[in-house]
Image 1 (tube, rainbow, N blue to C red):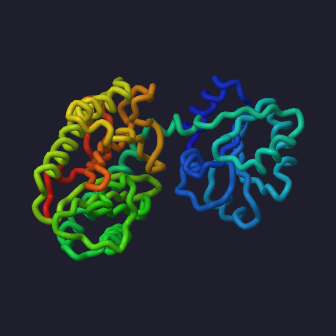
Image 2: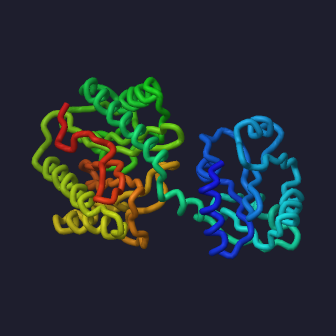
Image 3: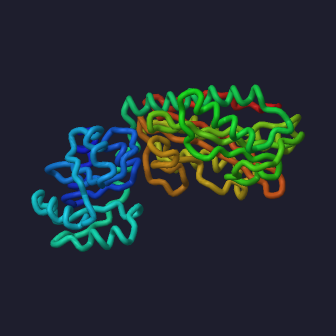
Length: 355
């Protein structure tokens, strides 16, 4: 367990006016307990102690792996256990991660006597935005492996390969080199490159295709996120124009990144350029998102974000243009916010790549 992270969470609990927090979201449990998680359970954090509540199948493993927290057998009557802990630790207001809690579990917790239930989702996620040195190193390793895999796949891409074959090769290289798959690999070619999240199909890579390749690596519980658009044969004038537009939009956004700037301003740097060039309606998603315990986490790089960037945040910057019935182009990199500006962690070419 990370005592520093627990104390930071307790400060947020005081501001929220709650006496305890019931945590069930696995990335949040991994973060607070400082382990790469494989054990089912939940945490109840009070000002007095930290309790990990689990079942018979996970109890012994939890006792072995979880340090500095009380591992408690929850049994079938969770409400009785919460009642008992709340009584001894003087919990009157209990915060819950409402966005992850099932209705059945919520109704069970509500039965706890003399406890007010408060929606408190997002508290741990807000802490997770600010990466510690060890977290950054794990993300850096994930990004290094991502870049390595990309160069490996470039050397073997050929017209006639199917999208599924490319995805399988990528995922195989990741596993062979000590990583895990961060999410289902996206390979979308030709007309399908116009689908922002087109999963790999049996379609073959054909001459004239734009091919979006989007994948990530999970390393010691931390992620990378990376996209390149490549071309099978020589791209046409419009494809080349759109590619260079997206590359320039991403450069403008990354140049804007620095400690203290609002995430919305970074989104605007890319979006205003794309709108100016006449393709605003073809860029329908936000510019990016935080990367860490989850591939998509806080902060969001969107027009509506009110979060200011701070050194130590890690974000994915991914402008894209998608032309229905035509093709799509997206370039994405995982970027570390530093005191001086930004460091691109997925260090792979952003020039036009042909196979």
